[in-house]
Length: 160
Image 1: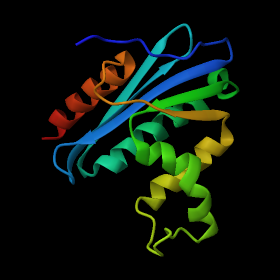
Image 2: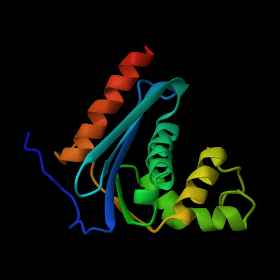
Image 3: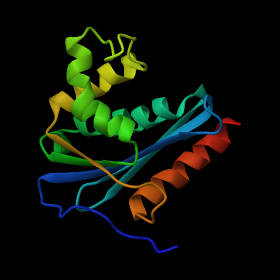
Image 4: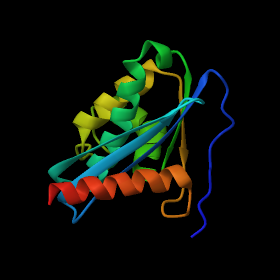
C-alpha cells in the first residue's frame, strides 16, 4: 500500500489535525486517536472504552484533539484544519448541528439526536476555536489517517 502525506500547507498560525475512531462490534470495545501537527512536532493521543459505538469514538477523537488545542496557550490562537474519515462527524459539526440546536436537539425526523452529550461538547470546543473540517477517505493510504487507525486498533485490542 502506498502511504500518502496528505496535509494542508501549514503556516506558523495553522494546526492540522487528523482524527479516527472505531469499534470491534458496534457496540463493543472501542478506540479513538488523533494526531496534531503544529509545523514543528506531532502530538499523538489515543484512548478507548470497554463498551461504546463507532460514532462515539469518532466524536471522542475530535473532542480530545480540540481539548488539547484549547488547553494550550501556544496552540489556542491558531487556525485549526481537521481531517476526519467520518462523514457523520464532519457533516454533523458543519451542517446538521445548527438545525439540531434550533429544533431542541431533535433530528428532521423529530427523534432525539444520538450522542447529544458529545455533540454539545464538540460544538462548544469548535465554537471557541477557528476550525475548518475536511473529510478524507479512510484506509486510502493517507499517512496520518493510517497512523490514527493503527492507534485506534491498538486501543480496541487493549479493551478486549
